[in-house]
Every structure is written in structure tokens, then in C-alpha cells.
Length: 225
Length: 225
DNA sequence: TCAGGCTGTAACTAAATAGTTACCTGATGG
DNA sequence: CCATCAGGTAACTATTTAGTTACAGCCTGA
Picture 1 (cartoon, each protein chain N blue to C red):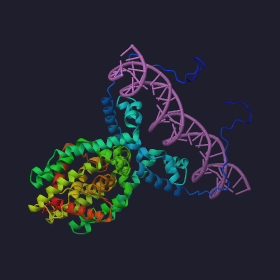
Picture 2: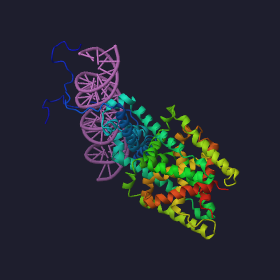
Picture 3: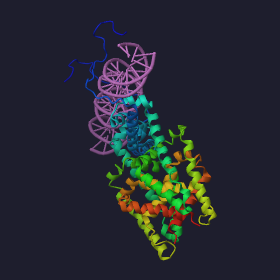
Picture 4: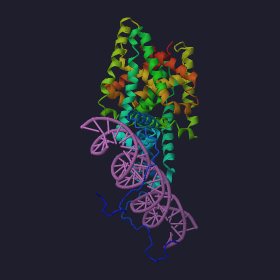
């Protein structure tokens, strides 16, 4: 087919420089792509992230990205899943049941706040995913069972507190968690518009410390008998 | 000019259908573009929004969009500014100083929650703008002075409450507002991932009512003496 | 009444971008 | 020691997209 003309038919002519240092380390390449993608998606969202940029940040090229992850959407989902695995894994090492109920709740509040503070990319990814109404997360099979542990342990601590007469009867585990997460998430994820409109640098260390104490105070005040 | 050659020189050949209904209503067109842009930016973020889609949603075309707003970024900023003007304008009609301090704070919390509930596009736009670290908002001259009224009135109510012995001395107006906004914003903006991972429909009416009461309760509990 | 500017349409263009293909190379097992 | 194949490169393509341009109807004031 196409062109019986003998020799001049190559569509592409190009040669690589021979003295190239090849890495040949699939695990490393895969991990580099995942890390680069996490940053790119966190900084630009799903719509704004560029596949070329991810490949470049990872020090590789698009061929490998598509090779390991299929396409942009699957890569994004993998990034999101890893982010959730990260926080839930760290949470399991907490063991909030080992102390008094008040201390346990305070621990969880501190942990959550500090995790958010250390992992801004996690907050960003949540924001992006919610913009898209959890379109990709809902497809994820892996994640559904990851979260029951947290609520279960929290319920136990609350129950103990109620029996000891220190917590009010209406204290609900999901509500308590949502309260803690709300106060941390909003302060950090919206820090840029808030700092702008209120003319106060919210991430200045003194303000961060104050808000950390505020979160613990509000959480406990809202369930104390 | 162009084309001495008589006939063959036109680059483009096309004629409009003559029986077109022209609107010729600049105010309406401008408003339609702004409304369409608000939806498009809220649904897709800055990176994901499409100028063509905005023009189509507005029932007009890109020519008018560029004509009235310059480019995509200026249109986005205008959308964001209007969103802020919307909530701050509604807030001014509240007059939280007309009641007891507790009622005043409760009013503000209810108002904020219900405004967020009615205006999901406002939450979305905030999320997008924060993803980009307030890149456009910081350029806005109009908005800086819009927000002091809120904090001022809130400070007054808190002061009255402290003098009456019902509020704690450490209650701070910005913190109180951030607490109210946190609890409303996070619950709604993150409803999709939260409902997915916790397997509970957060916007089911009963849950919405419960959270509304929760916000008021938490806010007041955190500042009650 | 008509010149000029404003409102509007749709085709056009240059650049960006997701995804593919042709090709190259080092490692390894038989 | 060499055939094979996974790991890797970079050019390529089809499509999308922001932004522009050629053109035309409508209105107003001189």
C-alpha cells in the first residue's frame, strides 16, 4: 500500500544521541510519575493539570505515563486513592481509645489538623474531586472500606465519655469528625482568599497555633456535658 | 484595497441567513454572559471552563464575550467579584445587633449556612480561587473594603455579650466568623466525597436540618461563658 | 438621509494538548 | 552469545481551545 517508490518512504527520520544515561528502573519511574502527578493535580486541578507537565516533573515522558497508568483519568484516580490511603493509614496509628475520652477527642483533633497542615496536596485533591462531584472517587472500589475504622473507634470513645458523664448524649461520631475536619479544612484550603479579604496572614505561626487550640476547644466545648 | 484581481481574491466566503432575529440588547447579553460564566466556572473551575461553552450557554457567541469582558481571566474575575458582592450585600441586611448577643450570633450562623446552601456556585468559585492561591482576587481593587462591615458588627455583638457575662473573654470576631463559615463550607463543598466514603447522603433534608442546628450549637457552645 | 459606531454572527487561526507510533537499548534466560 | 522483550525516547497526529477577523444589520445624531 501507499507508495511503491522504493526508498524515500520513511515518514520519520530521527536518531537519538547514543551517549544517553538510561535509568531502567520501573519502580522508580512509576513512583516518580505518581509523585509528580500528585503535585500537578493538586496545583492545577483535574482540568488544569497537564500530562506533559507531569511527565516532565517526573523526569520521564508521556510514553511511560500512559504505559503505567493508562490515561490521565486513571492516573488521577490512583493519585486520589493514594492520598486517602495516606491519611487513613496514619490515623490508625493514633489509638485514641488509650486515654480519657476528652484526651482522645483532643488527640484526634490535633492529629487531623496537623495532617492537613503537613499535606496541603491532600486538601487540594479533595477540593478538585468535590468540584467534580466525586466523579472518580465513586468509581473507586478500593476506598469504600477504608473509612469505617475511624468512625468505629470514635463512636467507642464518645460512648465511654457519655457513660462517664463528661459528654452530652447527643454527641454523634460522624458529626464530631465533620466538625474537626471542617475547622481544619476550611482554614487551610481557603487561607488565600481569607487572608486577602480580611487582610491578615492566617498561616503566620502565631495564628496557626491559635487556630490549633481553637479547634480543640470548639470540638470539646460542643460535646461537653 | 486588497485584491485588484477582480473576483478571485476573497479569503472567506460566507453569508448569513437574512431572516435572523437580532436581539440588540447589550445589557441583557452582558448579563447572560455573566450568568453563564458563573455556572461554567463553578462547575468546571478556571482550568476546566470553556469559553465556547460560556458563549453557548449565554445564547450568544465568543465575539461578544471578548467584546464585553476582554478575556477569559477578566471574565472570571468579574464573576468572582459579583459572587462576593452578593453575599456581603445580603449580609448587610441582617442587622445582628438588634437582638440579644446569643440570638445575634445564631442569626449570623443561620444566615451564612442558608446562603451557602442556596448558592453552591459561590462555594465552588471560592474553591477554584483558592486552588490558584487567590491569584485573581488579589488583583481586585473593588473587594478589599467590602468585608470590614461584617467583622465590625460581629465585634460589637461579642463585646455586648462579654459585658453581659454570657460570652467568654477570649471570643474573637474573626475566629467566630471562621468557625461558622468552616462548618457550613466544608459540609457542603465536600458533600460528594464525604457522602461517598461514609455511605450517608449528607444533603438528605433531615441531615441538612440536623447540621444547621449543629452549627448554631457549636458556635454558641464555643463562646459561652 | 446617511455616516459611523455599536451589536451581532460565524468562520478562521495559532497554539496547546491528550494520546500514539516508530524506533532504540540494556538486561536476561536458554 | 544472541533473541526477545520490557523500559525508554521523541517525533507525530487529531482535536480542542483561546482568541481574532471579515462581514453585516441596526440605530442615532448631524
